Structures are given as structure tokens and as C-alpha cells.
Length: 327
Image 1 (spheres, rainbow, N blue to C red):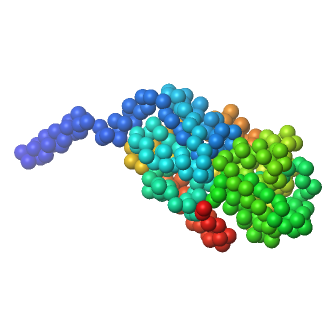
Image 2: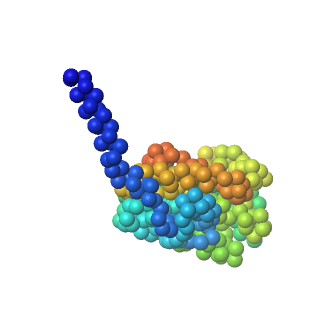
């Protein structure tokens, strides 16, 4: 009799579970998305981050069966885009594509959001090495010649960055510190304005992602002196590394990653991660990324969260050593 009662109770529980409403997160994933998705981009149009955003927006939109709208929000090394995204409803309809510069910015400036508290990581999307380029009118053709020229004309060479406290700023300061030269930092609100002034010779050099500047190098409008990777890249094997060029240990990578506002249902995060994976693994996307030395990554949400914490520790040490302060 007791066993029959237990079996009856178990059958009743199974039946109840079968008709019980699905958890809210599952419901959200099943209904998601029912309208266009906004992807805020922490840079202006024309830069490497914008390029990656627009490249993956199309296949992600196809997978989601909704348009993914790229919304450029330049300024403060991506802090403006981060604040907008952090305040958006956590429903998967406002996302952000950020770069390493935003991690560095948070180390030197006070922000009204917390990158590690106010967002749910989705995936690291791609990574591109930094490249040292100079205005072709500058009489140098190697890092060694650049260092010699800078020492002969102290504090007269200036370099463009994407803002005070950006990764491009930090890379320039690190180069100056490691080589013993004095450079003048010229911050811009985005890649496009800095590149324009470089092409006109108003600034003489920059450290920017390969995806941002390599098209100008191929067009011989800028001269590449070195790439900040441990090994030469396949897409530009003629460019020596910074290490080969006499600057030991100098590696800088501009990575791109996707975040959602904190509280976004995990099922929605998982769906977005799956679409990132499919997008960056598409042969046409991967080949287009490779042209500019960029590599698709597609790490899991947990891997990206760990990576973000490691980046904060790494650049925090560099910021302190270089004594970089916010405005």
C-alpha cells in the first residue's frame, strides 16, 4: 500500500512538472528576440572596434532573425557607451561591444558604472595586435631610428591616442618608458580623428590596433615600424615585432568583447554567446578579420569574465608603474 502511494505521489509530481510554467529565464529565451537588438559600440565609426561590430552584426542578425543595429557612442575610451548600456533594461535588447581601452580607462578615471558589477559578460569576440605606425614624412624606417630621432629631438614627437587613459595612451607611455624617450601625448575622442591628423602629418606616430590602421599602411599612407606581438602575424609577415626591434617584452593587444546589462537572463546570454560563436566562425567573417591581423575568439561567458579580471590586474600594474593619472 505504501509503495503504491509513493508511486502515485511520484507520478503526480512528474505530471505537475510537465504542466508547470517554465522559469522566467527560459520563457525569455524562447521569446527572444522579438524586436531589433541595439549593439552600442564604444568608439566612433571607422575604427577597428566599429569594423568588428559591423562585421558580426549581420550574421548575428541572421541567426537571431532580427536586425542588430550598431550604435556608435564614441568618447571617454568607451565610457559613454558603457554608461548607456549599464542603464538599459536587462532584457538582451541593448548590448555593448567594448575594447581593452575601457578596462584601462576604469583604472585611471572614476566612472558612474562598474565594469565588473554592472554587466554580464557574453564573450570575447576578437583580438587584434597593436601596431606602431608613423607619418611617412618622418625620416625614420625602423624602431631603432625612431628612438634615435626622438632622443635627438626630445618632447617634439607627438603620438595620437583614442583618449586619456586609453590603451593607446598607455601603450605610448609604456614605449616611452621602456626606450627612454620623451613623447607628447595627443588624445582624441576616437580613432578616426587621430588617423586624419596622422595622415596630414599633424601628429607623427601612434600605437593603434592593426585593424584600425593596416589599410592605411597597405595604401602607403602610413609607415608601419613594428607590431606589438610575440611573433610576426601571417597577414603582414614583413612587419617586425617590437621585441625583434629592440623593445623586450612589449606586447599590446586590442581585444573586443560583448557585454549585456547585469541581470540579463542567463538563457538570453547563452543565446547571444551561441550567435557570436557562429558569427566569428563563418569562413567569410574569419577571412575578413584575418586581413587586418584580427583573430576571432568566441570565449564562453565564464572565460570572458576570468579574462576581464586578469586584464584589470595586468594593466593596473602597468598604470601604477607608468604613473598614469586621470584628468
